[in-house]
Length: 414
Image 1 (cartoon, one colour):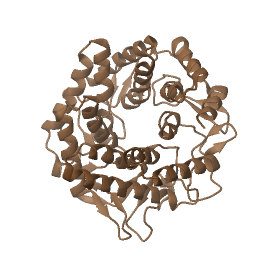
Image 2 (cartoon, rainbow, N blue to C red):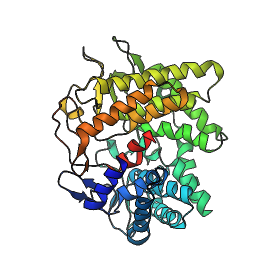
Image 3 (cartoon, helix red, strand yellow):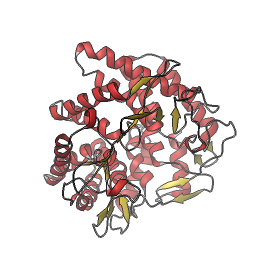
């Protein structure tokens, strides 16, 4: 599947950001500020660990010869960090090839002006040419988003490590300081924070989009520090305790899910993005105190099971973007705008963590179900495409092979 996705991208969209597999052309989009080759950079480490050596060399050559960082456009700080800087760092650590390191550092420098705010909390959008930065137009009152400024820590510590320049680490340590200082409603972290005042802008809490990867980066920061970053571990433990107390619920049908919180009122909806949490909680459980360990493994298994149900209850056996628990139908999307599947990795990623940590064979079986569903419903003549409605067996394709399909989704089986 990886080879087919890559070969199709190479044939029809090489150097563009993503492949459009139905129209057999490339897509640039406006998320990366004029940067190109998102699929190349994102897929580097997957190609390498799958030993697709020829393909990896093609990708490396593109980075050396064609990856231009002198662009002038508005980029998402978060997306550029996770896909480009994350991709380059992974490739550098796997291969030791200097080109990946130098490109990562050069790009990291271009992101620094986003942190020039009264609090040091970065704005979400940056012009990679001029260094001007601003907040997303749709984000509440010029605020920054928890999952965006909270998902820089791992990469930025390594930019400091590799360059000897302390500025990258200082920027993300300051973000953590602000988050530690600010008062958390019920111990929860809302999704929107003002980069000017350092206060929460509205009390919307979610483990899905807008919040998700902040929590993941806390536990991973602790692991990456060889378990020395006790501040990250404490923040993770406290956050998880608050999440469990205020957001984790069990449906009438016995499914455990994580609701969203809007100013103290629960919205009984769980997003596909929140399904990473099964894997995260299992990863954290491994390092919890003995009496909490089993509790967290059980919680992780229950959440992963709920996410599996969201797949099993659809006609395609792929899960919707979001599913609800407030009506008779549980773990299903109710509105058409939430029925799509865009090749996202979170559910299979949790299967992978659960398999690695429990060796319960059902997780491999569940992973295989997804492979079959992807092959049946998402594979088209020239690559893989997302689908617009998981509840119909003759799905409409969305004509997009997301870069994270190669970087994350397909990596889960390896």
